[in-house]
Length: 238
Image (cartoon, rainbow, N blue to C red; front, side, top):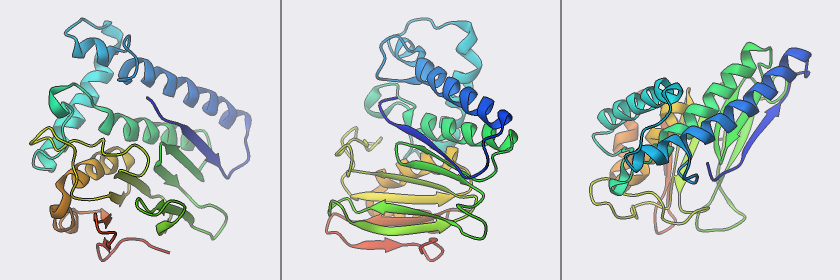
């Protein structure tokens, strides 16, 4: 899907965990086949051109589209899987795929893991016994510096912004790049929705802080175009 995925295990790699790792990698390649907008032969690219897709992909595509529609309702239309009129559910798919991998590993006995999909992260358990995970948030205007360090257990962390890919998030209401923030980091329990909500909140710009403060189970940190950093009261900084 045009990005890098990594898996950090802090448990012994038993035969069951090893099998789950292989299954996880296979699953991510499958998700790429179905949903990557970088592949002209993917199911989502074919749907975008109005072409039929294999029936075996139907249930997964329907699940993701339902999640996208739910996110659109929750965010008041600030999340869209058709930004700029182009079919692109990537803002939902990456978090959905990462969370699925995290659950797969947990079921196999790997209870302390960090699954990272292009900087959007599902944390499970601890980094070490008695030690929470620590995740650095890159400062979008100061290369090599951190805006904050997030710390926690069983936590999802998603960042939308300009640091890696420039102004790539579109305002779904105008179809133009969102420019009201340099970055927006959202934390929650489950990455599927946290990732989608982070994309929406970034598109909101100046309205993101008030919206995030009213969003149950999530906290936010934003960096404004002037470099000012704000965060909601419960944001889990170290």
